[in-house]
Image 1 (cartoon, rainbow, N blue to C red):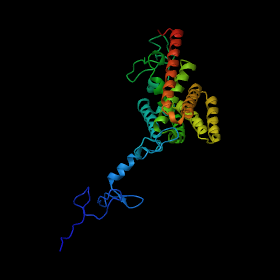
Image 2 (image 1 turned 90 degrees about the vertical axis):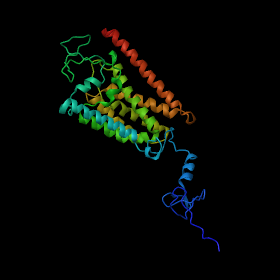
Image 3 (image 1 turned 180 degrees about the horizontal axis):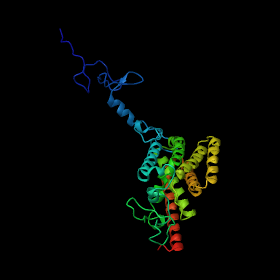
Image 4 (image 1 turned 180 degrees about the vertical axis):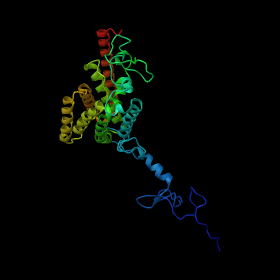
Length: 323
């Protein structure tokens, strides 16, 4: 009489007896290791091997269609949209911490004078200077501000100004539109392309203000990037054969406010809109088999804005004797 054969044990847990087997490799697996399959169960090794051969889904523009929590860099989770909202809100909280409650109503604070769009140095009128502003500003230590403007070494303002806001209403309005449009656009493009569109549009608004607005203007806000999303989404919807009528109505209402409210930066809004349309065109008209051209197009657009900034700086230097 033969010896009774002992039950098999899980190949990953040698102390667990089991009668379950992987339908692909026939290895014994315990209840903790089994992974449901269309027929029977599979072991973790076979599932991992199968995933390697499956192509990740992508959007029509080459971005990852999976969520960030699903192992990809796709935009369906709205990660970049949420991050941009978080950065803008964090900057406003910092503005409140530095400037106090006067920042709630839209008053300029020390952080606005440090990070907003400005062409020249800020000088205290008592100290003089090549370009003296009629109002005196002081820093956190009570000293006259002499931070550089864009034309005098403060090119960083072209980007930092897009994360500054004048008052809670300004911030709230921009963040609501960012939440509505951003998730749609990020899902269509994927996170990296959406982030590129957002930042390039914001820069386009800042560069347009630098080129065409009064050099003494102090401006800030994410509106350039917001209008850029309008421009990009219009191009994307046309590429995907979607109806743009509702988007045109919403954009039209915003443009009416742009021209009716005196304190709104027309150049920032229109510059962002044009910038978004340009990035959207780069994405829309690039052949599907040459998506690497998206990044070349974005780089060329960034280089163009850099060249225009250098040109404008030269004009201001010659006009105001900043050299």
